Image 1 (cartoon, rainbow, N blue to C red):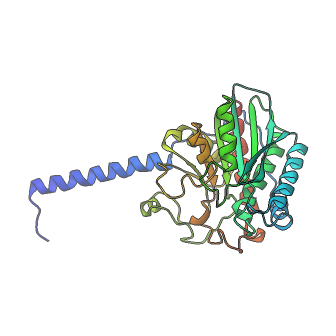
Image 2: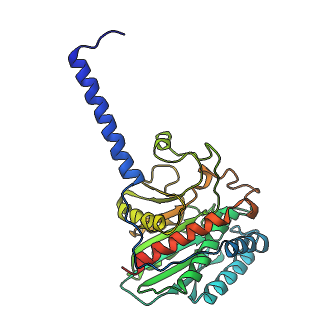
Image 3: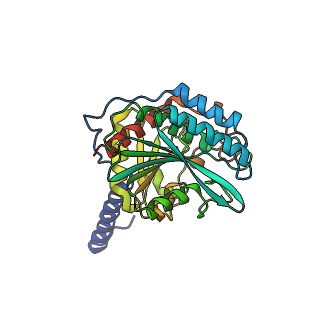
Length: 331
């Protein structure tokens, strides 16, 4: 190997140093290693894996299909969700809206006293076409119901609204007809302040297999595990503080690894759920997810069934989200 001239050696060293500093900066911004622990005053809450499995199976086996054309099935599912949230202590209402001659409904449940700013947690209960949709997104909806049961027993000082959305899936995905877009728009129109919105999007699939986790950008494999055994908190650059708060509460609640990503929406998958509707309305929002198609190869297939999910780890996700909601609502 030829010996480098001193000035070229210095340039190479400077370039390498800048590269390393850039990598550290990206790592700090993207994975956010410095997070707060769970507030000491937060009560111990624990989600029940058996109830999560029961609700996933109920949605998949009783209310299938849940595509945009199956209005009767969607209505039956909405009635079940409303009954469960009401039994948990929620003050339940519905938001009805029309799309192309059909009437759809969001199911809303309020917990805690009125406060200047609201915490919203949502999950979509529709499924793609006639697919079972166990992970996508019966898992998120089951998590929403279990969260309601936990909040119904928790000391809340602030206003929390749980929302089961419809029409997240195609053909209305990323459109003004999504249930979340209608809900976020109604809040903005009424002048409601939202402290935070959390979207539960596919929270049931975990695996300890090597190289089971993929990424939208190859360099992210340097910052995150390559096993799909963690939960992700995903937000935009404007919401870095909220991402840190949610991840910090989740890490303090259970031993399930929690990672985060704060990035522009141009990164594939970052805005692919209902939290995007709240960004559009000017509200801070994050997505809690098992990373969907980046891990679960059964995504949008007829193999996305209840027996493929890990309810023990899904329960840890819900337990962590409950702690995050308490931290936000009781500020």
